[in-house]
Length: 130
Image (cartoon, rainbow, N blue to C red; front, side):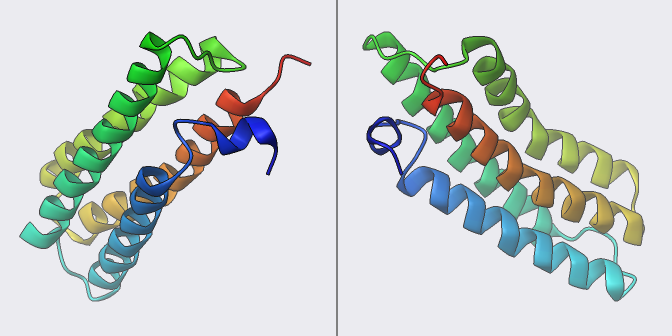
């Protein structure tokens, strides 16, 4: 980890909590899909908790921006940030529209994409301009 990464506002406990929560929820949704179960209340509550963690991560990033810190790739950073906070609500809507095992599959897929977007968010902050 570089010195820039150590001071990154999007790298730390909130990012780790978001990633772990997302992977646990993905596993739960995968089990439900394998058992031919539609998305249940636990999955939707998990998506809501994940959204809260991601919103907290976004607030920390925006506060750091307000404090004068800047990401290495601002355009990509804001794109990933907006995408990140939109993923759980999108999964919830699509899962409710598909009340079959495939709804659980949608939750699983989105929860597997979320950690990748968190890591990309961290990487776009840490780029040092060349």
